[in-house]
Image 1 (cartoon, one colour):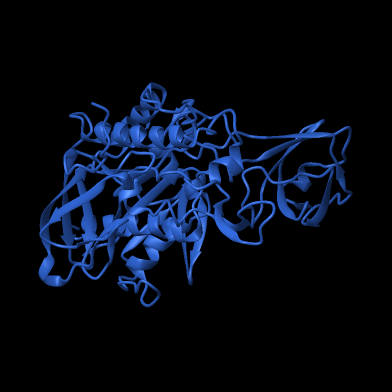
Image 2: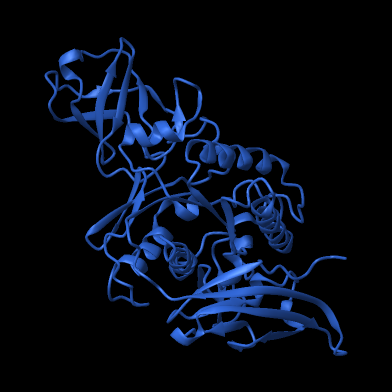
Length: 435
């Protein structure tokens, strides 16, 4: 039977937080609304596009929910069940350390920042809990939430494999530049130079090559490099450095050069971070370009390596694997990928996303991983019809009437990032109530 309903085993809800389960994120169909989507649950309200439940304190507990897909003849085509778990927020008794890992959906820090804001800060919309100082988000990438700065590890275009090897640059990558000649000496080490608006610190000096590490303010994985480095501070020999070529060093933050492998203990030690109690992983839209794909063996190879290594280095750490949201269904795929090649098949891409999420949940539920891994279903809590980027466009070349058309295939609008942050927040409340 061709599976149509993709409900996760469990969803986590919070008292006072409006939970929405979007049918587009659980029904795999070109048009999910071809069915009557019948929802049966002791709580909540089933609207045409989504199920909504705003729990009150009296609702704390677990609720079974069933969804039936009903055709025009009133026949049930498929049924699925899940459990809604409602938690009342409680302030943790101790500080909890958390590491978030991801790709371009994480790179800007939006969803990590929103989950942190809702848990630690007061005010805002939705209003935060105000549990200040109770969670510590570690990582080399930084994002400011009001006066707080949180860390994470998020790199555009990365996938499971990228975090298990050392072949791609990251936001922390140093740069080697090739020069015809220079007059820099040992006394010039640690001097500061400007290139294309970015600060670089001279670290290593050889006859034909110079190595710079990043100064403050770098946000791009591969920032623009011009032919001239201009002195800013601390150099004895201050003449401009003219380069003829450059290359970024690989930048896996978890890589240990001495053992030529990922090493989470070393990552914590060299960066003076606290050992994480939880690690949240949001991967991967990268590497899912085959439409209708059911084979995720490549991802399995590296996902299991990453999970195994984390568990080996931090046996008490709990890992939370976040699924990916459904891609744009109203033009974003066309805008980014055209009519041929990877990702160009809109519904094939939707199907692959559903299958990938099912694979990830089954991996977390397997005997090897179920004690320390848990799947979080983002797609059902993400409104892919309205929270992907879109813009007004003429309905045709001869009309002044406009319609909203998608402009990005897989990257959310800011509202979409906030919904991913909501999933993070709900998980934090569920997990940290136990701490």
